[in-house]
Image (tube, rainbow, N blue to C red; front, side):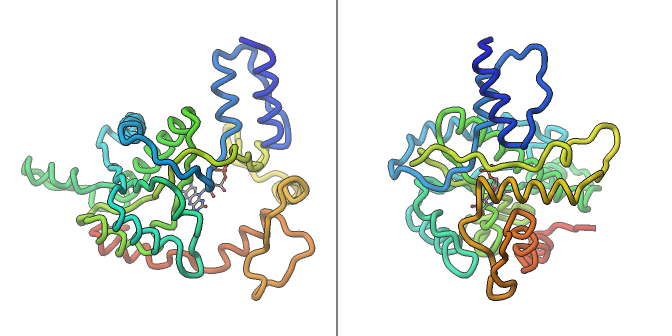
Amino acid sequence: MGNGMTDDLFATLAERFGKRPAQPRSMDNPEGWHALAGRGSCRAFLPEPLESALIETLCALALCAPTKSDLQQRDIIIVEDDALRRRLDALLTEGPLGQAWIAKAPHLLVFCANNRRQRLLHDWRGKAFANDHLDAFYNAALDAGIAMAQFMVAAEAAGLGCCPISAIRNEADTVSALLGLPQHVFPAVALALGRPATPPKQSFRLPLSVTLHRDRYHEDGLPDSVTAYDERRAAAQPYAGQRYTEDFGQASRYGWSEDKARQYAKPERAEFGNFVRKAGFRLD
Ligand SMILES: Cc1cc2nc3c(=O)[nH]c(=O)nc-3n(C[C@H](O)[C@H](O)[C@H](O)COP(=O)(O)O)c2cc1C
């Protein structure tokens, strides 16, 4: 184990969290962990497409991720058809919440939560499905998210760039129709994929004193910690612009907490619950 790499790892973690975490006496893979510490979402790609077998391999690795009770309630749809891609891009890039960068990503994948297969097993095996409540939705959504995360770890370890896209749920019914999703299957999150045009940027994280707990949840010093985080982030990684200035004006000090409070002062995906119910889930 090279000390240089361990130093790099802890320097990167210190930069991210604002404080160097405790260092274990021994580590087997500081290089791999340094790559994890230094990762970042990618929204600018080289135009060249990836080999189809490479994407399929990444999907296989993603689907090796753990899955609730081995139920395997997630599927991945690789968007290959140009016309379909253009229609999805139109949904993702246009309108007030549109994200123009998505259209330039060489590949788009949709991670779907799939509770349908489980229900089919009940039909085929002549057993009632006695879990038609919120858990069915939650387990499938979590499975899809875990698979997406593992896809990103695998892709980023190979030098590829990815960015999750929750905007795929902005018009979940239209997306579902385009992808032919049946009842009890829904788009959980999409993923842009390609070779990065620029190295990833490491966005700062809340300090571990806020997000890491021992034995018991606490909020000790939370307002001060968030203010300090806002200031640290605003100094080193200022936002390019302020959100919703027409409603909230131009703030002289604009940090993470102001950005997030402004973001969720406007409804996002307020229809998603109705969509999920229409897709057959009971959420009680
Ligand atoms: C479930 C999920 C959905 C996301 N949706 C979007 C999205 O629609 N557009 C986007 O630009 N980034 C999206 N992201 C990426 C986050 O903005 C990003 O992870 C966060 O800003 C932290 O940055 P980092 O990944 O570079 O560390 C999403 C991330 C997750 C986990």
